[in-house]
Image (cartoon, rainbow, N blue to C red):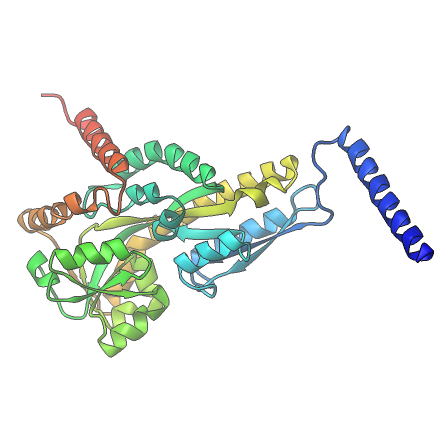
Length: 351
């Protein structure tokens, strides 16, 4: 018994001594950084080998070479970690530390992010879109930070277009189709049903099989994604409408980010910003190129007359009252409308 007590006393004394040494070290340094490179696991739906994946790989190499031992970035493409809602859950429990997500996943972290994308046919061109979004993003970044996440870059994949098995021209015909819908957006599915559409919630990995089997016969995706996934072989008709811009970005857990030395973080942030610029430039450029390439392989594009386009814009606007306060928080919805009006009034030619 005496031996056991002596052993316990030695252990306790050792703990006190160790604690004292740590306290003394703390007088000279407020943080003790972990030895060796930090591992960051990143999930994304981006297909392996795509321009998005390639940009992430280039960024990962720059992260590896960063000062202070660098950071080991492990990328999981192709949705191997599940859908975006699944990836967000994995980030919250620590299995993943980062994600290249669309607004579907980012809205799981901060609902206001939906305001960057969820307005069908709201923007006439990229100039309008950029004006509104660049003014909204600082607010979104602050809100994400309040939820414990750091936004390393924003990017987009260009315009989303509708692809169909059979040709259509009018909004009324769209209601007769079985439409792909993001499985993570329950509110969007509900709104579509209320308005008379037929959404079929799916993960992106299931789109091709669903087109082949007839579970869906219409899908809205960026052309570059449709071309790479061969959707046009089963949905060979496209509407020439700029439905929306597919917005996304790279987010990392704040606790992970702050565990990395400041001098290392500076290099990581610069590499991430460069990757974001590259992803956006390539996504926009290759979107138009993908349409042209698919047309050569048999894709039929339905061009819009001004009258027909006006019908589609009016039909899209019918969704706005239902979007406000559900998919998009009311304050963000109103700010988007205000900014869009501001841009159009300032860019209109003087009488």
